[in-house]
Image 1 (cartoon, rainbow, N blue to C red):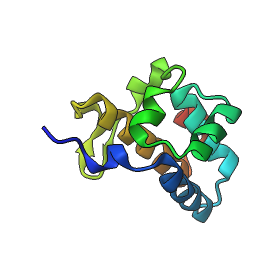
Image 2: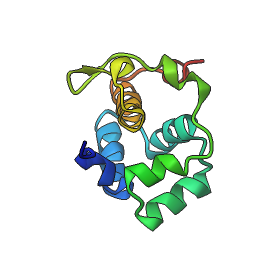
Image 3: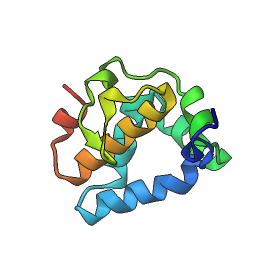
Length: 116
């Protein structure tokens, strides 16, 4: 089965779009970074390194230090699909990230976004 096109997309190409989406709703780059770090376990330096290296999503998630154990609590619909029903593990991680950025842009509190 061919892999999804998004797997080969560079994270560094999508990252500015996450920031732009958040900033349109009066959220900050720092909040976007916090959400990404929460999900993946990257430090700020590690996140910046991934962006600088231009790694694709597959590599970005493969090299993630530790996926947050609460990531399974990320539920809902993104792109018309329930994230908790996505079978491909990599696609689910990508959609979890999309969902978290959506929640940020919709004004949810960081406490709720980070499942505290």
